[in-house]
Length: 71
Image (tube, rainbow, N blue to C red; front, top):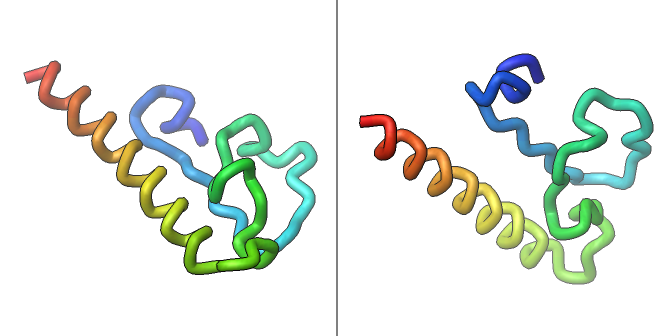
């Protein structure tokens, strides 16, 4: 979380089962899949995993673009 706060890492919480986030250190972060709904709660769980993958790919692309700008 320290590295995330410093912009040196990306923390991407993935909710697999229903849980209480409450005051967890990552509570304010965008949780995957869409809307933070647990994978287990999706009618089609494969669709939840596809959503996770697509969102992680977006983060990776954002990181790549940042690195290119620094060069």
